[in-house]
Image (cartoon, rainbow, N blue to C red; front, side, top):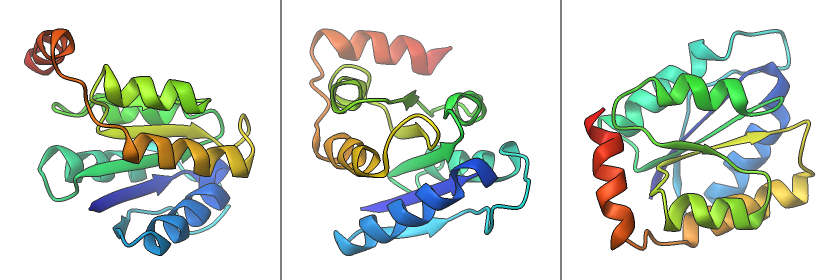
Length: 143
């Protein structure tokens, strides 16, 4: 799977860790930056990653910030992106199973590094359930 990753300065360490984790699992990763912990504006990095997901260049995307909220907001401005903030394995599972989230947002200041990797793993391995949820996803995508 080809996966976009991006962060601002507050999520840089986890972005790097997640990128290496994804590569170790055999995924192709496109890193949209940032490239350091120097202050950076998250829309500059998140929007290109979200566009790559929306345009089909990447199948999924993982973005990281201090809380993950601004990153999710920036990603969700791109039509076709459904970016969920996850803070637990269960929130990640439900984001995929019920919401078909094609992007995941994490807060480096809110979850441990071990939990962040578990969240990514659950999110990647959980299929969309479809069924009654599909109608809702179609409504989201038509907005």
